Image 1 (cartoon, rainbow, N blue to C red):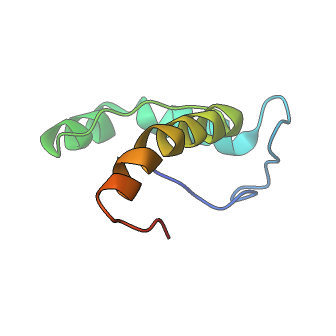
Image 2: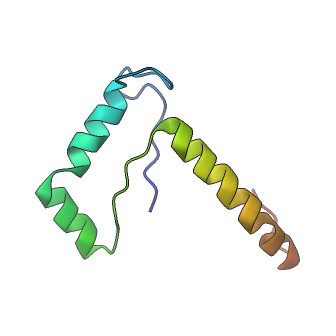
Length: 76
């Protein structure tokens, strides 16, 4: 599960040290109640920076695109 929100959701900016959005996300994901609820849903919270998420997505697209093409699935 990936939680993606619009840039500047809480006034933060990508690449800015101490990004308020990142801090709030990390704080929320550290909450025991939220952790328990995610566990019930089979999710494992893994906070990342916007740059890390961008790199992860690019790597996943590169990995999955050949599989999708072979199966006749058009990305979109």
